[in-house]
Length: 105
Length: 155
Image (cartoon, rainbow over all chains, first blue to last red; front, top):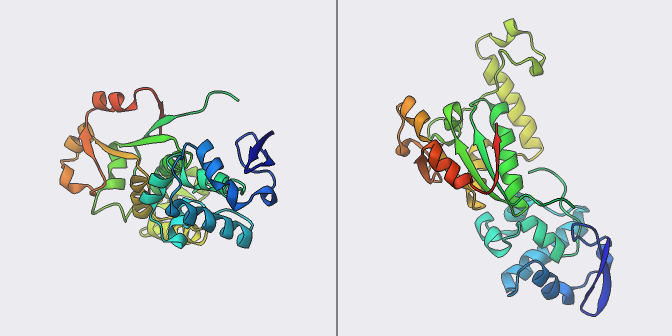
């Protein structure tokens, strides 16, 4: 477990870099977390995916995998990988402050 | 934490449903983790990227003790289709994609898809027989070139 400061607030991350408590997250942190993921220019498209990820997690209690993300967000798998080269589900979940999606597909 | 895996090359050599999914799941999972992945299809694994065959990959119902089905029943005509249909339905319920969709997804994720030249020659196939996502028909030597610096997984 590590602590990081995003948007002036201290948050706790697990060994893989996911938020241990999604309630510590807020939208102002997006750019800084993205920067830690190697995404230095956060576009509206990134924000859309992150917002969607957050919404899905809050609705269903689990972050969507890449396929589900593509299916329901309308952003194609190809574009998702271009936006989040470090693995879309993984990076988008980190940036959205939610746990890693469970499941194998 | 030990060193992270950054690159994998997965060889798919089998043409049965149970022989194909593990490699596809590993390739897709690798990409989802941001790991570079390449898939190399050889022998009966070529069916996975074959235009006319990729929709018809079936479970092996004979010589497959894991299925817990007596061999004499497994060999009955249509048994493989019935078992495949049953598994397809179960997988659809779990939202596991079909083989053609899965391969398309993996290609869209940026993984490389390659066919083995020796097997392509052996079965009298050509690049045109394969789905558009297949980059190239390559030799084993070229495969090692592509796989350089990563892990190789044989399935």
